[in-house]
Length: 221
Image 1 (cartoon, helix red, strand yellow):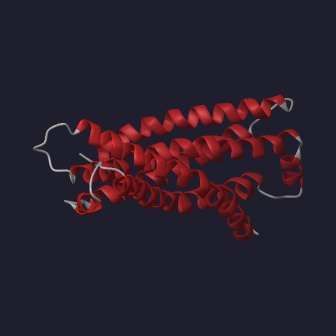
Image 2 (cartoon, one colour):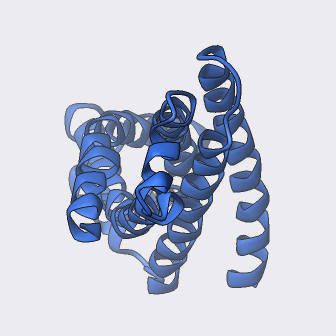
Image 3 (spheres, rainbow, N blue to C red):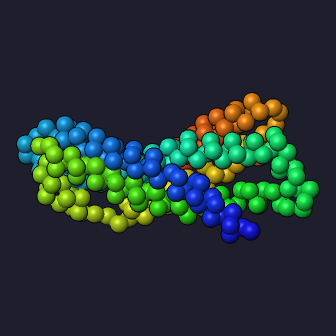
């Protein structure tokens, strides 16, 4: 029963989020490439630094923190709305009457699926974002594709990659638990479902930014 529920949440919370992550990442990678080129004014600076800048910006911030904020809006609101609707319509009460641990049955599979799949979305965001920058290098005079690829490979620190994955695992837990809390304890009429969804997104975003500072200080010191 828990396995089927976890597979269901993998599809709803993870696979259904691939599209928005791909679309946003490819355009952000392209924009970062153009902005990095604009800020490199000195002719003494090599053009491969554009690739270095795109790689490090995606690794250190966008593909973990910014993607987590996007997922807080999509996945977090979905979780809060789903659980809030079930609470208002007394479906959670019915589960408890049947002897089912409603919190474990409804929330635990969501936590497991997001903590497993969101790091994969981070990896996907990195690949797609760098590809977006490569496409800009290919069709414009920002940098040659060879220099861009060389910049992506130049002085790569594997620690940056693990740093991004660790952050996303923590962010996945934050998004799921805070959103589930607001939905699970929703009270009142159906209007409360919308309010709990809004609170879930706002609180998740604030806590993500707070833990982004804490984890950066702890991991990159």
